[in-house]
Amino acid sequence: MTPRPFVERHAKDLAPGRALDLACGTGSNAVWLAQRGWHVTAVDWSAESLAQVRHAAPAVETHLANLEAGEFEIGEQQWDLIVVSHYLQRDLFPKILRGLRPEGRAIVIVHMFEPGHETSRFSVQPGELGHLFAGGRILVYEEGNAQGRATARIVVQPG
Ligand SMILES: C[S@@+](CC[C@H](N)C(=O)[O-])C[C@H]1O[C@@H](n2cnc3c(N)ncnc32)[C@H](O)[C@@H]1O
Figure 1 (tube, rainbow, N blue to C red):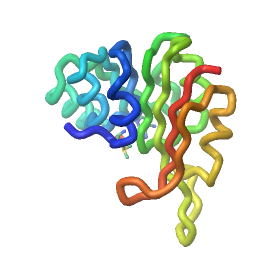
Figure 2 (figure 1 turned 90 degrees about the horizontal axis):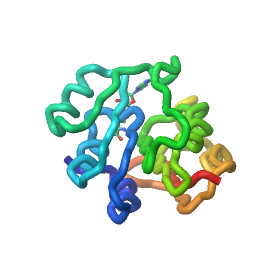
Figure 3 (figure 1 turned 90 degrees about the vertical axis):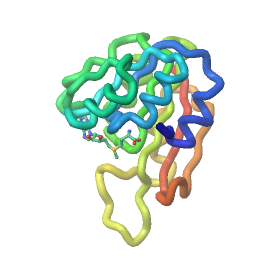
Figure 4 (figure 1 turned 60 degrees about the vertical axis):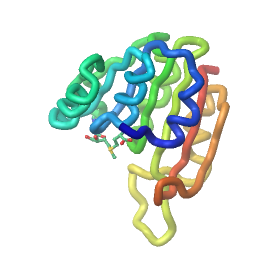
């Protein structure tokens, strides 16, 4: 399975450890990480998507949970890598920073508001993703077109 290019670029040289993929969908990132030796936990509220993840990579631990309802506990200093790709839930970000081990990283990709489209709670404004992660140490920050959509992309460590 092909991961998101931004995830691939910033995870390919990391030593495998414990990874969490939130709102994993059918697992493009989770499956790729598992194939590279990561111990992956993948969360989504779609049972069908999680079944596809397990089919592609049986070692991935899947959790059926509504993240907006707080049904999955990220925990404290549990993860070497947390990936959130093409899913925006602002109140997860402080929890993600707390959930990372001191040298851990979060790789996050969210949709950006595009002029001419209606504003949506699922899109960030320019600069917003950086502000949302202001409590962390930002290693990479990008905004702009990627894979045919305007996105904001960040790699961040706990502050
Ligand atoms: C656009 S897909 C992105 C999937 C994957 N991360 C990727 O990059 O291809 C968004 C995913 O978020 C999941 N999702 C949306 N709201 C959710 C919620 N409240 N709790 C858990 N998963 C949710 C959907 O089921 C879907 O799989």
